[in-house]
Image 1 (cartoon, rainbow, N blue to C red):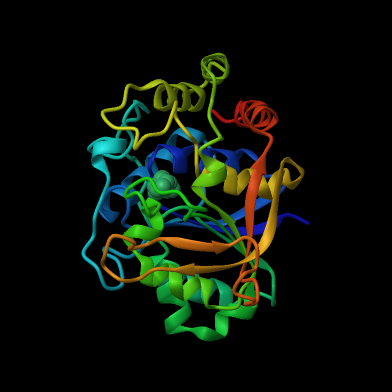
Image 2 (cartoon, helix red, strand yellow; image 1 turned 90 degrees about the vertical axis):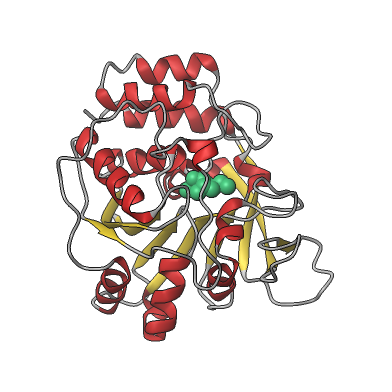
Length: 308
Ligand code: RIB
Ligand code: CA
């Protein structure tokens, strides 16, 4: 049985690698849809980028445009990291396909309501605005979700601020809604995704596939960056989410209570991970903290070589 997944995303170079991986693993993952959300760049651009990724991969899933801004705060984007169109280095042409007319949140609600309990995995790779809106509009969808495997937050780390990771910083209220929903969560924070880095030799192997996808991935990973938010190399944060679905044995973690800081001060968006259970509160996430990065990248290179 293939695992049914919905990807919620703000492409974003690392989102693109995650989407390529999911499409390449179509024998194990059934991607029901790709929902674009405002994050790295505005949602019009993240929607366009999701379509550009599909067009080059040669395999596709329906794309839905989602939320234009966070639940409460104004949108803050990250063009200074990912480039004006969010896909610096990919060298991709404009999209030739079009998004669906249905809003992403309506797609999430309709699809989950039409699914069996515990049958659909949500894979958020950006701010959690779409997911939170769906849960607030239709709480009845929660039992339909098998698990939420997400990239966001961190343990005692930040990138966009010293205290917070970008996805949770942009929409901390949405992150709080999701972590309070009582749905099984697997959390990939910066503490582990900053180790998902491609070596120069591995970047060359993406290009050696001789495909448009391989050229796009190697171009994105080899690009010079105006800002790396302090990271070494090009961490492929979001790829870890899809890789976990395929190869969970490459990762390790611990069930923890995680709390999101929603105030608009210096701690905005911080995810406080109670790794040693000091608060004695029930765990609301499996927090991943170990990764076999070498094996992971080798398997991603091999799997994505099947795309066009
Ligand atoms: O902080 C890293 C996360 O923010 C990644 O998902 C990246 O794509 C951006 O959305
Ligand atoms: Ca992302």
